[in-house]
Image (cartoon, rainbow, N blue to C red; front, side):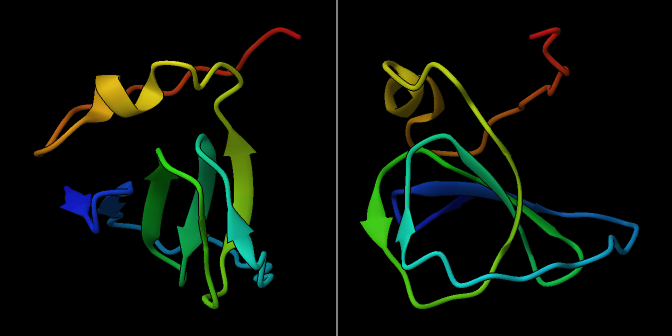
Length: 82
């Protein structure tokens, strides 16, 4: 689901382990866990005061904002070999 014009999120059915940090700044492509059950993919840069558990990031963000855009979407994650 869309939130704030800068992120997509989904609540997970399982609780994941947390290692929260306050990043101060979110970058497009950051994949974070909010709390213990909310997966968030950010598609725009912005400052933040929230805590997240960093999980990874999208390497090529050149067209990420256009690809995710407004509204709900479907995203598939795949581990890279490099």
